Image (cartoon, rainbow, N blue to C red; front, side, top):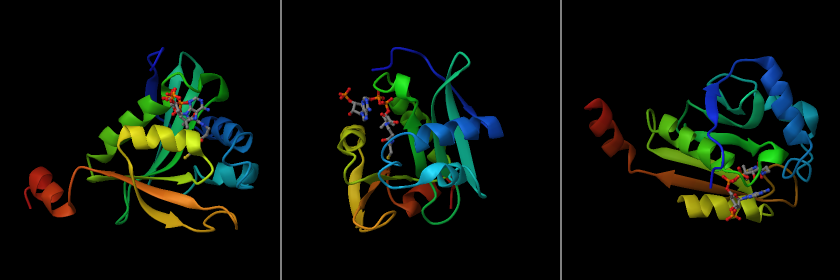
Length: 165
Ligand SMILES: CC(C)(COP(=O)(O)OP(=O)(O)OC[C@H]1O[C@@H](n2cnc3c(N)ncnc32)[C@H](O)[C@@H]1OP(=O)(O)O)[C@@H](O)C(=O)NCCC(=O)NCCS
């Protein structure tokens, strides 16, 4: 449960990305996946992404990157809490925020989680995600990613309900 109210904001600030990449590079799953600082930094680059940071005062408590284009739009590419904030609700707060934002343009929320990251899997399954695929050797050979989806229905239903076509 959250013990703090987090201020979640869209960020285009490179300094925030640097902090986020450093947090990722120093923690699992990215250590085991051998992502390294440069590739963690790359997660913030590229078109059609929105980067949200959760602040506790001036501290970055966590962050999320979502992809907003393509058939699989609504993919949460990154979800991470700063080490000192883990277990304090920021991951759940970011998930809720991302889900609300994604449902403005897609009925589906997607996320990947490493097969060895059982703690994060516990959170995601409890949150309502279902496993829809297994991506073998996806990031690092010998390590699989579970593809998870949480949906509010088909694309046809979503488009008729929200955009009247
Ligand atoms: C996974 C993560 C984003 C969850 O955010 P969080 O703020 O710690 O989670 P919350 O406080 O909202 O929810 C707590 C639940 O998250 C899960 N969890 C996963 N990793 C955790 C961790 N390191 N510490 C505490 N809870 C964790 C547990 O299921 C926990 O439930 P419990 O308290 O009943 O055991 C965060 O722990 C994290 O950044 N971990 C390292 C990076 C990572 O694994 N990112 C996800 C990649 S797919």
